[in-house]
Length: 192
Image 1: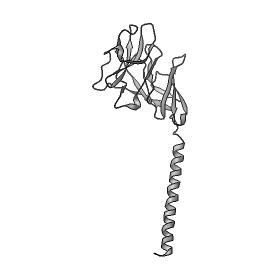
Image 2: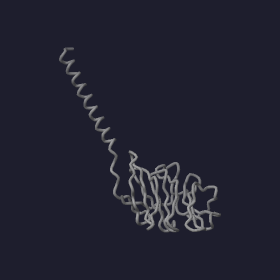
Image 3: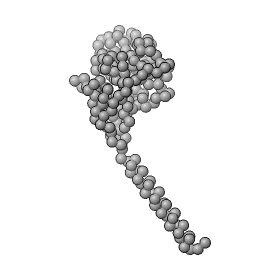
Image 4: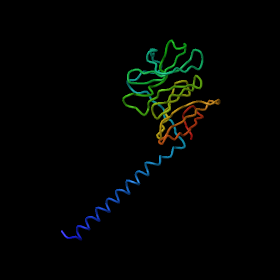
């Protein structure tokens, strides 16, 4: 092997190494700048899945997880786990009995990004659930229909309502940046 061919091989290897380093730098730079949060997040209707409880099914108080939120002395909402599914549940007798309030919001084994762990209510019609995943699930008709807004940039850290009844969501995105969204229609459309 001649010195020139040996040198040519070294140059080719050197150029390839520089190209790899440059592409690695480009990937690292792209990874360092988080994606821009969407201006609008639209919710989709949650359909009842086969094998889950029908709306209005009774749920024992022992299945309730976390806090209970009451809009009157007798009417309240909570989250319950039954089998592999999590449901919003409602009571009209101060918590003595509970019933499912719509479809299953989360199937544990299949839908980790869709999990919810907190529930809140503006009134008897507007109820919202969030936490643990990347969604905010809402109803604005007392549980007849539920909608899911998927925040692909991160996970909702908190959801509250203001004095006008609008919902405010604080979504933690990559890099610990918090983005605020507001919904003026009970959770169907969220705007940054």
